[in-house]
Length: 302
Image (cartoon, rainbow, N blue to C red; front, side, top):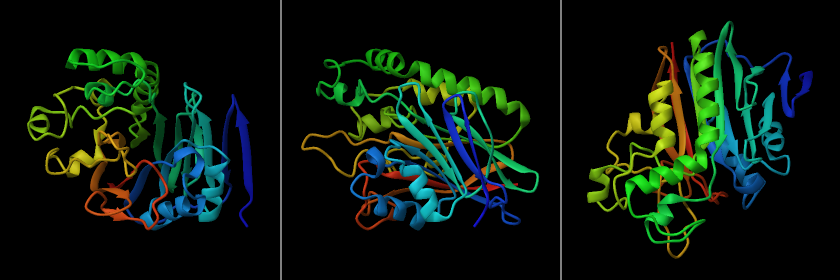
């Protein structure tokens, strides 16, 4: 059994193994974004299976409750669990087979040691679900009435998520000076600016073109790239919907879960949707437990 250190500071908790599961060879890294649906959805056992069967090595977890992150990590034999609260008070966690060696002030990001003198920064966020603009643009009242224009949708989205987005931008731009690879996972509760295009609207995939502000500002101000859209640049042929494998009778399917990346030494070699069945999912997990499909991306780090 590995000897562990438990550290608590400013309301943030992380646990790392002294001996750590540090890689000694290999250039790939598999990063997952996974909303586990209120602490494990249908089944914590099936939630663990999603992580195990996907082959993920670092996971940004949203809706962490019931000590789920620690349960998942322990079941996988992983040494690192980092649990924190978003600005909205929602439970978030980062679990990893590699040890945590540092954390940002907010807890949104952690520094992981993936090899001898080799590190990455991992950030994870869960943005406000209310109001949900895609519903409102489609005539479904959700924390407000119907929206009609791109301008209205952008204003509503930015008002709802501005504080969290600006915080993570500030923290990421600060640590980018060290030239260490950066990853950001999250349930944005907002589509990508790369998806709601004129082409997508003409294909019936979205109501109107919208340059959604959360992803747009992250791309522009930090240089972070969308791993799934890098691998699949055609938003019409590969919509990559993560919301939702459990649609209501009237539903708006969308891609609101992301794995973003940055760094001169980082390239994405593969990205896919993890879920309940094909063709919606690239990696199919039997008895998939969550109301969000996960995103799994594989990176090469020079």
